Image 1 (cartoon, rainbow, N blue to C red):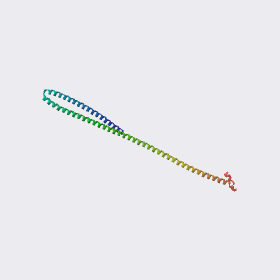
Image 2 (cartoon, rainbow, N blue to C red):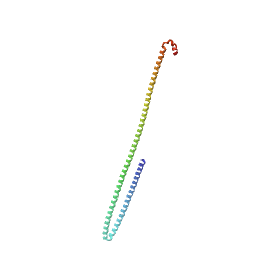
Image 3 (tube, rainbow, N blue to C red):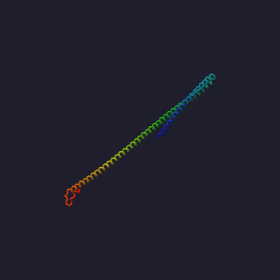
Image 4 (cartoon, rainbow, N blue to C red):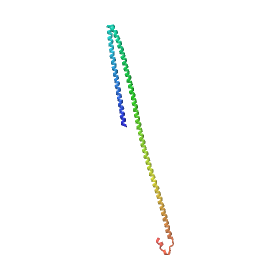
Length: 212
């Protein structure tokens, strides 16, 4: 994903450089065109001056010829004027066209820059979204680990409590057995003492001696 974005940005940079080169070449062509037009106008002006000089010389020789030359000169002048006006019109049109092209290139550059900014903004938003997802995932894992730890502690606590309760019951049972044994022992002692206190019959004179 990152390599594709870098490749896309490099392509946009190459396009921008290409546009700059094309603009420079167009500007050079316009300057050269202006220089050619100026040379043409200079040549035409010199031709007109030469033609006027010839006309003046011809007027001295022949009046009719001067009239004809004057008419030709006027016609030529009108032609030159029309040509000049057409040339000026063409140059102005080329200037206007060049301005339109410059404006169009600026507009395209603005749109391209806008798209690049939007692309960068979307990439940053995507990074933030992924970072938030990673953080949420991390927090969820921590929460699960904490729940597992608490459950384990609760289980261990319950086991200890159950063991303690079992041991308490066992203790109570043993105490009860000991108490019963003591009770039986006390009863046996009482029977023994009772037997010892009983009077001895003549036929059993050795009974007390046996217990002694």
